[in-house]
Image (spheres, chains in turn red, cyan):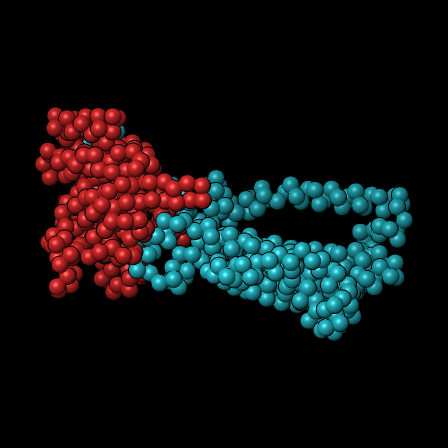
Length: 269
Length: 293
């Protein structure tokens, strides 16, 4: 996973940002309704290097999800610029993988067909996509469930399917919006371990939004802390943990505890 | 979530409970089990019907009510068997009008709903007209259709369409709008075209709603066809009913009612079966599947 993929010659602005997988500069969100206008996000700036895992934490309603959506091009900021893989985000991006809090699977499709939706929509070669889907299914431990319908799966398994679907086209950037927020604590820990392994194996850049401080510190190489509304970056913390992290050992590590304590104090201020 | 887990092996394995569940749901039932299910589901309504029949039979046999008001079940049965050919020929006419009306209402209703959902202009200009078409009493405008279209089956089909299409439109609109917004966002990150999103996500997601509308429409189409026949016809069950009424031929009147109910039930059941075939994943089916396993 190296630098920017599409850089137009002579475009100094895009050339400047090459090297960043994701870059947000002074992004503002102002939502105007009939009654009032709400400043949701103020002067939000963030850079994610290629292959980096960055977690975004913040109190409810601080605009974390809004920021993430703007990276995917699903929503346009009031002002400021968003760049993915060196190109300005002007509409929905197709060079990303997106995972939502709900698994958002198609009820009528089995596990594999749900993953292959990605391939069908993009017009990827069928046989190739099928092979990749099998590999992903194997990687997240869903082998034997290829034909199972979503309602036959547990919440954690559904979210695994959703992750596979987001990775099928091998996107350089993976955006995750509280992907494990709806899971019970135990499934959530397991999914954290798996996601971390998947990230190490694929080398994709990840921007993950979460409420959970320990999740953010365990998964992220950096934890970006947002203030409450209007949301802005109040701290960008490098997590002093090795890239290969054993879950149990990490939970007990003093660096882990010091970092979570620091994030927690920032959030409760 | 700073809980410490004591055993690493537990971290990678939460798949154990689900296989058991999925196999239970997918297991096909034996014929005996299915028969048992059918009996379990149907004995209560069957008991009510039998009870009503007994009451009917007792009242008429004891002569509490004159036969020209309520004929004995036996007399109705005699009428049905002795005039079987006549009734069948007229039933076919009503069935034709019902089915034609239903199909036009279903196809047209779904098409109009799609148009409304995808075009704000269509919603603004069409929706008030649809509501107007719904609230106007169909019995009142049926005579107009006879004037326009004559005594053939066309005016009856038109009344059936008018009665049946509104629930299709309303439920299809609800269905198309019920799709998870995350799925639509997801589709745009996949670079999907509007048409592909519709075909692969939006339309299948709307089917449970569409089918509930179709079920209502199917039963209404029977009513529409009969209303059309009442206004001006020389064939069809509605015509048989009017005729029998004029002659105080109550056994024939009852026979006509029995046939109309039968048509309604069969049409409804056809839609039910289609629903099971097209949307086996439907949430309401799911509950029964898990409960029964």
